[in-house]
Amino acid sequence: MRFHHHGPHGGHGRHECGPRGWGRGGPWAMAWAMHEGGRGEGRGRRRMFDGSELRLILLKLIEESPRHGYDLIREIEARSGGAYAPSPGVVYPTLTLLDDMGLVEAKAEGTRKAFAITEAGTAELQEKAEEVEALFARLAALGEHQARTSGGPIRRAMGNLRAVLQERLGGSEVDSETLHAVADILDEAARKIERL
Image (cartoon, rainbow, N blue to C red; front, side, top):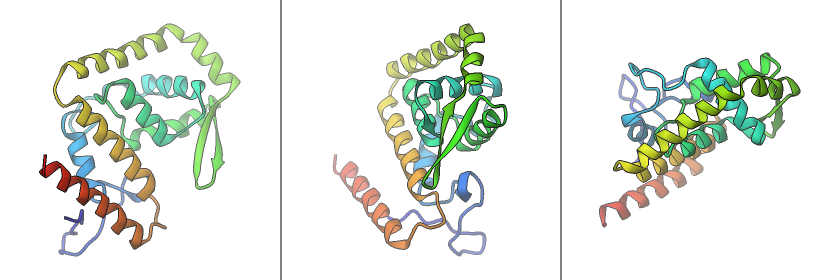
């Protein structure tokens, strides 16, 4: 079982959307589709947090520790118990906006950027401390609700898989050997699940 995407004329291709050109037709398309199946910011759904709220959540997490974009997605997902993961198409522009506002600063680490808080960002969090506390309480409440419902651990694991595949395979420089190796790992996981 390989995760191929067929273009409109039957050939192999991928949608040019999302960070670094990866849409939902890439090698992690199945993981994305399964993971997006009941929540998140899919088309036609109301966002769980609006733009200003997400900015504060990201800023608070960056204050705790400098982080990369995909780290922030995974951390938000972990804190919500797998109930919510902002899409890369929302997180990355928000980080750029925070950078433009002078609240964070981007530092290159190889091919990736890590974001660290600035003095202005710390002051912003202090000024809006009550709102930040309420936002993280909402995340925790989501996690508690998710823990009481079925499928929570699976959604969390799928979220981790999505983030790792996106980070590892998101660049145009990925070679075919790596793609085949990842596909083999996914195939083996599928076989083990079938045998349960």
